[in-house]
Image (cartoon, rainbow, N blue to C red):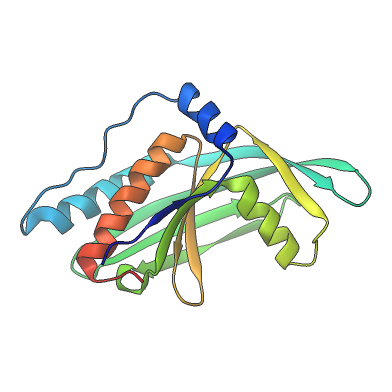
Length: 186
């Protein structure tokens, strides 16, 4: 069953990214028994290579017009993409806009994946602010532009942040293929 890679955002945003990025080859697409192992290896190497993602988020209170800028760090390390278990595990560390350090270990069974979404991080962060009691806070931009790849299952999600939209798309394509090969999807 094919998963759709949802790409949200304005055409202008995507057009500006397209002109700023260089062409990126699609992930490997081998056939036969090596397909899952090769795809998982690509995912593991890509996520480990992605490293620390640091950025500013510009936030506006839509009621008062007040503007704020918060600095964030997001890092995923020690990624293991296990084709035998059809699972991705990793260590994550985040520093949020308040300077709080949050970290832990996580895993994601690919069989449980329902969708994979790729979108600008400001959309995701605006939704999170609204969900956590700040409905008037809107993230107007991030510097540099950040793209999020979300792996969603029924009641939870895992996500990875990227500074290059083309690279995020390539990793999302590989994740989509791995989910299909593992029997996941909606």
